[in-house]
Length: 252
Image 1 (cartoon, rainbow, N blue to C red):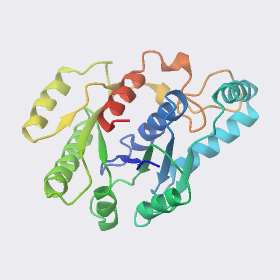
Image 2 (cartoon, one colour; image 1 turned 180 degrees about the horizontal axis):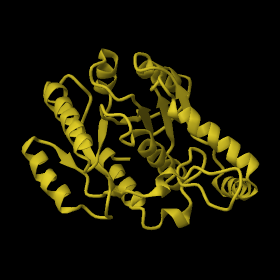
Image 3 (cartoon, rainbow, N blue to C red; image 1 turned 60 degrees about the horizontal axis):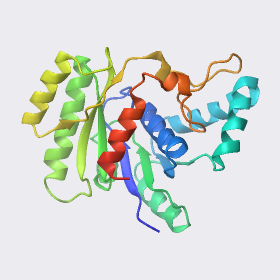
Image 4 (cartoon, rainbow, N blue to C red; image 1 turned 135 degrees about the vertical axis):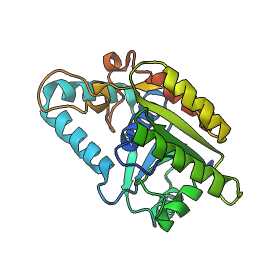
């Protein structure tokens, strides 16, 4: 059994899209690319992944269109939904280790982490990650918060050599276009001076990223923990490109 890669989308500002990005990336890897994943939901203030999975179960049971889509998908997939474990930041790393010792064999373990850098338990958890991805947007407050967080991790943790972190990468999220704007390019140059790096792929601001189904209607799922994003909704989303770039970064 090879050792899995520990990955987290993290920043200290709430509402930056960490949980959504985690769910989308995990589902693309697991259901489309065949990479076994596991999610440790350690944001014990809200446990977003429990809400996502509960919603998936309800809509795929009550909506005939989604129920049929679910049946057809698993008829071909032959696998199971990826495992979601609920815990808190202080116990998250040990929960992952215990589950691996019990026989779980994911290639990637995603940690959904609450947004703060002032909690010693979260700092210790960040330190055992292999890769961190920090969502950043063009909103001034979000941008400053993301850069401050990434800089702190790099300067106070990575450069000390006392963490497992191999790289910290910012991810442009909720951008007005499908490519980096002039502002993104300017901020990228500024971040390079700080020793920071952003991925090439950007995710535009789109309602599709929050489409998690309803009990009626014929709209496919985009954000789901039990199925891959709907093919029609996936078109033009830049999500496949982002997942490909993340795979190249974490080497799976």
